[in-house]
Length: 303
Image (cartoon, rainbow, N blue to C red; front, side):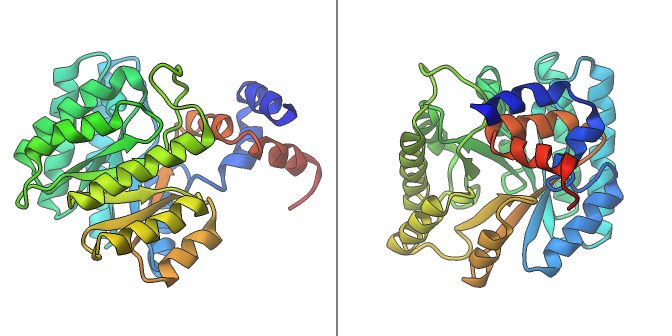
């Protein structure tokens, strides 16, 4: 209860305090920071997905600025030879303001990535965005069949039905490509599983479905229980290196990440950076209140 209380009030603390926690999980504020950290991860055997922080914008001027920044990021990262791809949140391109303009902005980003031989992952946001983001994925996938993917969330009760519905656009020439994660947004029990184990169970149900149907899946988890069960499902379905990868957040469970790499599995690390780091950091706190105690300790104990 103490950790939850601290996590609830920390977003109102000065940004410099929150940075004590954030700097472990965010590459920095500039493109150069993202490139530096990505190259370090590449050297350690991981590929990356780079993410410019910022979401739920208030104006379409911000959307245009975010589009232009992503175009620069793709140019810089590919020119530097970073091994990885890119993640985007549709609300930072105006999804909740002007859906058509949002589509045009993200299309430019996907087109740039395709030209550079790279890939864009569309992040899934809260429940108000799910239908719009699935529709966005369908539209972009029709034009860029191998250059765009989507995130799906195991805690949402609807996800299996969404996967089944998307099978109509799954072909060998144009395969579905998903990141499977637990999900972090606060949703009502009517639409989202709340029990810790029932979210795990649904995660494995969805993973089994994807591997069975040869859907490329990024297995995004830091839960060793899920990783161990994923190994079993990979073997059960005879999945090869081109059928899946594991994914983790930058700064989280580095030892577990290394063990996955050492077993010969492809590992992709989500590398966030940018000026708008504060919202990302406070969401991480809400997701894992135990981190709050580490921030408090950091105020009084050097190192």
